[in-house]
Length: 210
Image 1 (cartoon, rainbow, N blue to C red):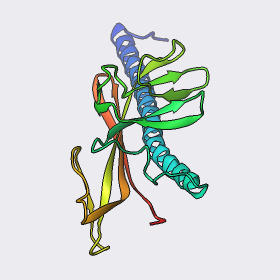
Image 2: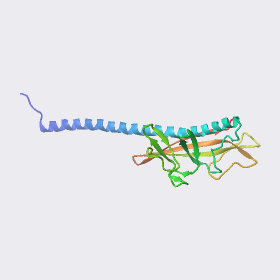
Image 3: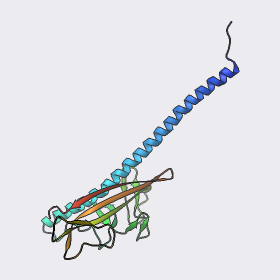
Image 4: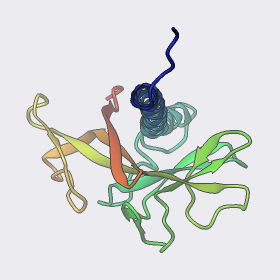
């Protein structure tokens, strides 16, 4: 004689099935969350690396201009007095990068506008920073980028001795040191599900023609 499932057997079977389904769903959610984090981390790393390359491009441009007879120094546009906190701004009209030293810290700029915030032009997937409110086509993102361009000072007496400045308001010692490079530190911050994240790229860029 054939027997059907009892109520208890049916409940146990359904419970096992639900546990399996929930495990698969949880795994899927975790994979999607990890993918989003990985994507955000990759974007942040590339934005930080871009900041370093901006400094390198300006240095190289200064070299080329000097070779053409221009009265420029290798680090023109890469410092304003002893203010070393900055953001990199792209001028799409002139197709040039400039370093803006209005930034004081993340979310704190001399202009009052958050110049550390990065904006995206979604149709072309570009990212950029602005000194004032950008065009309507640019939407704010979760990313903020701040650059610190600290001078590398070399002793005029012993060329093996170098000092890296680590704060605004400091300078190479006149008559004893000269600036031969820049310690470029670019930090990108973003927030994900209420958790603050950050990534930093650091590189020494020298006036190696020195």
